[in-house]
Image (tube, rainbow, N blue to C red; front, side, top):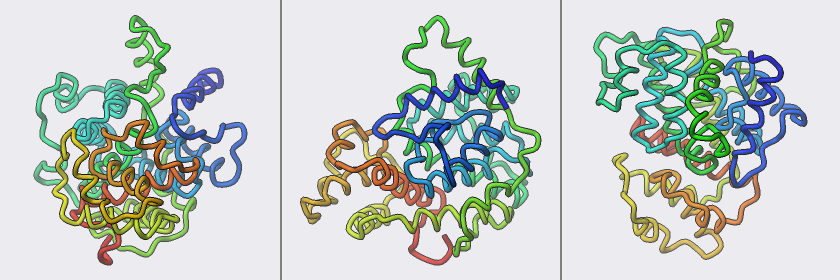
Amino acid sequence: MAPKPVKLALRRALREIRHVRPVPAGRATGLVRDVYRQLERDFGMLAPPVALHSPSPPTLAASWLMLRESLVTAGATSRADREVVASLVSQANSCPYCVEVHGMALSSLGRSEAAEAIGSGREVEDPRDAAGLSPAASAELTAVAFTFHYLNRVVSVFLGPSPLPSAVPDSARERAKSVLGRFLKPVEDALPGASLALLPAGSRDFSWAAGSPVVKEAFSRAESAFASLAISPVVRDVVGRELSSWDGSAPGLSRSWVEASVCDVSDGEVAAARLALVVAKAPYQADEALVAAARLGDRELVELVSWSSFVAAQKCVTGRVSGDDGSG
């Protein structure tokens, strides 16, 4: 864990979160406090992409379960290979914040050939496609891909393009990245499964994660948390219908596709439906006006964005829309 003065400085990064007010570390209680403690201990800092969920304790815990049990803990794959997958997915989703964070982590872990390719912008094969992966390794790397399809969408709404505050001058940014990267190293005692107790057991069978019981359990618990959120049935139906025939490709810069999908939605729910659709299929289009139009409180906004991000991530990784069958 970072020394106390550095830890306090890293906590100030929460000020960069947009649209919602995260729970300050000193005021956290209950589930939020428990997640914050694990997050600082095992990830090295109170990472804004996780802490931004704090207005909704269940989504905070669910996002941490996915991140911790896919990326942070010891397993059948190296942390460097997992960071490669995180970076590749973040690049594909046009999430510069996550690309920068995981580029810093790769630098602190030592740059493998794949990491060098990412750093130079060359094409690189996704490690999940490599021959000979064990079932455990396949589950872990697929879980990382799932997690970052989720986090990229959430980050696109609530955070800017860089983990470094805009006040950091250009001349100091490389040095600041180096310092921050040192606190993103794996924690040696981050044992698998320690986060599971944060959420009750889930009911779905995540067959793609069968090679890793801990990953399977973490994602089952997270899915149950997202499924239980108070999302309007109208919004659930609109997003489900849109994703059912989606091939995962970006729809481009125009948002005309959104209007075709919400043409039969009532005025009272159309703004939330628009936001949920954009988060799911084109998070880079989630601008200030779209968020403001939804007129949601902090908890409701976090939960809408998180739910939509989760069902889209599941579609990207498994080809299924969450809840369409019993396999998760």
